[in-house]
Image (cartoon, rainbow, N blue to C red; front, top):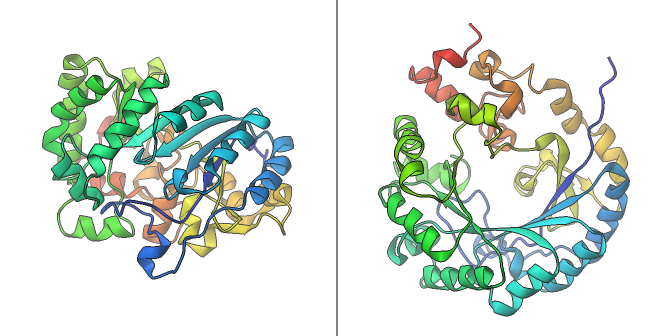
Length: 358
């Protein structure tokens, strides 16, 4: 059977290996924190070359991320590049460097959405998680600048023991700031967060499911701001999935990462996992990479039917495609491994029987 190659819809552009935070839960480790003298930043001409190669493949959008994308010395110029090629754009940022001027430029450059990391309802909690004194105050200033420019930023919180009890206060703060939505991320137990999880700072499967229940049954009625919670599809209310009001799916079949080094990759994890880096953009034809690279072909051939473990028995596998392939690979060395959360839930008797094939 001939496998149809999907359109390459979105670049995830990792602009720099640098960050002005050192978040305890992050999969990303800035170069300076590994002893390097300077950070790696993406050459704008490399990105232009990648865009021009990808447009015939269907490229329509860019997600600017990092590291911290606003640290890139040419970030303002790159916003113009995105506008030049009429690409939809999302910015993921900690907002600490965003002021009224940059927020206005992002608006005028046709950025459609901004996601801001905020990991607590107060400075003590947020700054301790992000390991930056004064970070909370700087992030709030950035959020207010974004709101003043007309954005309704999505606020992203990664659930940990230290912030889970603050969720009602966090939702109230988000509404007060003028945010458009809240996204709750499950801590992925890889790289830095592997240590965090082993120390008991992450939530257990049962604790995460308890939070999900509260979001669905209580907080969604108490607070008018939309809350997206990143639990796998097997644990989400069926009504939410059927209605189409169900975000948070990794669009893995239509995404390619562009790393600070100028290489393309499965996603940002290619910075740490060499097997998922797909070659330098300036020396390898992007069409050949997208059509024929073995990593991408294995995913297209294997997802979702060849997923392993509990995912092979899950009725929702067509919806979630194994959730986070990058995390699965880092934890197991196999792109088609079961998602760790679902496998642990199954092993603990917490996987919903109604979402199993057998």
